[in-house]
Image 1: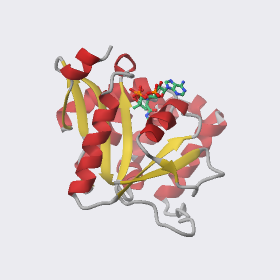
Image 2 (image 1 turned 180 degrees about the vertical axis):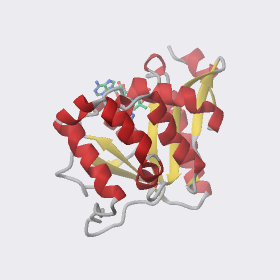
Image 3 (image 1 turned 90 degrees about the vertical axis):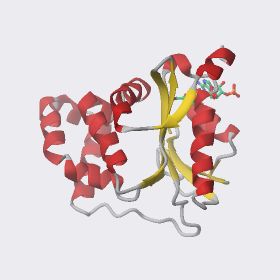
Image 4 (image 1 turned 135 degrees about the horizontal axis):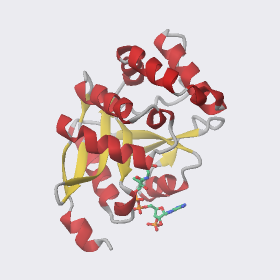
Length: 210
Ligand SMILES: CC(C)(COP(=O)(O)OP(=O)(O)OC[C@H]1O[C@@H](n2cnc3c(N)ncnc32)[C@H](O)[C@@H]1OP(=O)(O)O)[C@@H](O)C(=O)NCCC(=O)NCCS
């Protein structure tokens, strides 16, 4: 496919006006995550909190025929999850109360518990001994199912990596679920490597020298 589709794609900075379509793309790409299960508005609020800052970031969307086909959030997002949870705590609790079934699932119960600990400041991240993880990160990338395999995801990554270089960073990092074989293959092809810091976790930390 892809050649004319790829040529038709434009990558441009992501703005607040894109958050609706971005949330839609998120919900399709990450349909089984805790955030998606809390509803579209919760996803919009999450990305709104990333975009609203105060984070140093250069996030982009891919657009074809005026429609968003993918997005990538990249930058330095220290404390972003805690800040999102604190700002939206009442809204998120309300959504959870409307979906009590979510808490029965062990994985989602663990997520909710982690969220509570983060808000209370009791979930300190353990920095593994050795190298610190890169400050500049790919926080989220997703492409609509019909645009996967078209090369658009690679273009989104290139824009974000170039932004990191321009800001003076020489390493870039990300986290990916170990069972996400397609994404891992995609990152490995772009020279990202497991940094070995999270062997026991269901998530793998990867990094690349820029
Ligand atoms: C991850 C993502 C952005 C990559 O974009 P993409 O357009 O799918 O990427 P590509 O097609 O260029 O590359 C994917 C590679 O995985 C391969 N692949 C496809 N399905 C696969 C599978 N089930 N298992 C392993 N590899 C697979 C592809 O063949 C390709 O490798 P190749 O070029 O050697 O053939 C996209 O798949 C996506 O949006 N996924 C859902 C959201 C997501 O998981 N984001 C990452 C979270 S960390």
